[in-house]
Length: 125
Length: 283
Image (cartoon, rainbow over all chains, first blue to last red; front, side, top):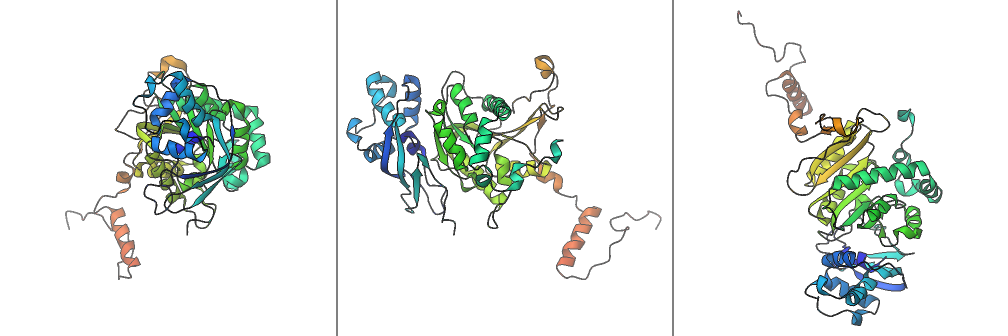
């Protein structure tokens, strides 16, 4: 699971969850891929990103010092160099093994072989 | 004959049907690939995304990622959701799909995304799986409604969701559309090539904001006549409820009332061909 996906995921579909965002992320193993950098696509993606959740994701892979603490004012004013850092974080980091945890119900969703499993195996009582 | 063929959704739940062998078969069948590709392209066209802008789309029931590939080719980004893990594993190994990502989830359990995540959603031959109960505690009606509600939540305002599916009968169509409308979507069916049994394709186009005209359906005879046959492939089920209601005082109304009172254990008159008739003026 790439880190940008984490930014959009929520456990609101569970019963009794009101916000369910951002999900806590536990990373046990990740690989770095090499996906082509595209300035426009990166900006489109960054426009949709919730910055607070991105910081959570960056912290989970110990890379929070690579991105600024505050959200940059305008994405399209950033240089390619700065955007590449975000691109790397969002697209290239692929979580192979780990867990997503609902912040409210503490339900654990395992990530195996890079695919997060959101099926509620023992839920729905 | 198409009608003699067993539909896969009748044989069992999707996560069991699309096991390793079936998933591999599916991915390598060039006929399926070509059709899926064509339908995904049409679905993307029906989404009517702003030209020249890259969007972020949801691919529901992405399977091995054939439709996702179409999304990428059109310059958009995507996240795919499917209930079959073997299918997703094949999709993840595909290098063409590297820039997207996949999530293992059952549609009926809801879409696991925060509000306003996507610019649109497409789904190719997936929604009909939701119309069948695979366990005693599964209620297709509830699952459909919950699916549509959670989908409505994670789409941006003014965006669309397009579902291609093969409806079995009108009841199934009505069920799916009814639940979609209940969840707040506007929209209806677009039927391409309604006259051709094999080429006929049904798309459910759902919109999140305002009443917008449905896109035109494709028909057999090229561009020219397409403008002439205006309503050929359109069908709205806006007021299916209204049609169901019987007029007060009519024979059907009297019979319904009689049945209701029998149920309540009241003493009622027997059924008669005379009930509801007008008396002759001479009487």
